[in-house]
Image (cartoon, rainbow, N blue to C red):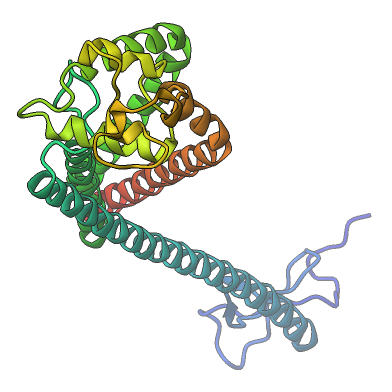
Length: 320
């Protein structure tokens, strides 16, 4: 049976704004009574003071936890940004240091090449078909390439310049590609390269001791003295050069003037081509280690330069 609106109930409604201070409060048929209590975070609190205090405390705790979570996330993001900035700074300093070393090394190689070219002429020129392929010219070319690449990497890392970093990346990638291509072609055509090299070296013997070929003459003298050999495939290769039973003085077991005209028993008889080839095989492990270190260094340079390039692009896009 429903209660009438005049029945007594323990729940009362808060007085309205239109009611007077002395008038009794209006009753209503419902389950709750609302008082004109203040708002907490946009919500009306329950009527009783005890319930109001517990409700306010619970809401306050929720908002405190929420703000603590936001602060924690902000600190994590700030720490991550600082770590990223520190990594980029360390990367930049590392690139500057190593590229500076490369640039200095290129300067040294270039200086040695220029000194050999001025003082020794075409030093260590063994090929007659490629007279420009001398030790001095090779050192000059290698030193120049290293200087240019090192300079681009160093300046690009300091300034965080995108064109310089991209140029450094492209040149280094092109150089690595050419090195890999050269190794593949060398092993694929090794027999043909051996035959061509022996034929070209024999042609170069005809220029030994002639005017204008001091580089070739010095190169053959050094090779035969250091490797204790004579001729390309045999000491008889020199017989076709002199049209006599004679060899250069550098083929002698004990060097002396015109010792190449004496008894053949006092000459080196081992072929220089096989001696040099054997020396390369003995040091093959060291050569592979050097090649792997060079490839690893170039790969790291590619990765670091592209990382800095992408970071510079993001920074320019963010502040654009």
